[in-house]
Length: 98
Image 1 (tube, helix red, strand yellow):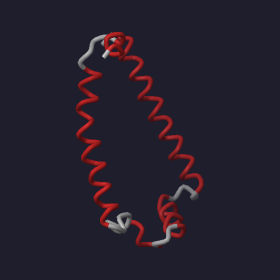
Image 2 (image 1 turned 30 degrees about the horizontal axis):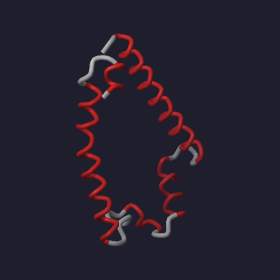
Image 3 (image 1 turned 135 degrees about the horizontal axis):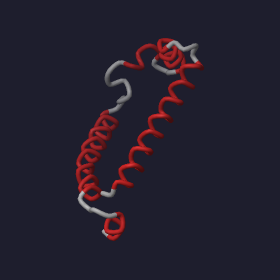
């Protein structure tokens, strides 16, 4: 990978971190800079109330639990394939040909 490519990756990483920080600041400003207030608002808006963070609350049926497990397994299984494809080719042109 050329030095220029590394610079682009650093810039992209910095932009992503800045965007995440901006989202966090914007969200906290809506709840009076109190993270606990954010959770209180979420509990007030959720049908389960305060139990919305209980483990397994999002999986109301066995099918939901199985679907989430399959998604995690397939997503994790696909990740090494993607990493190998992008990080074993030296140039962008050769990467695009594959």
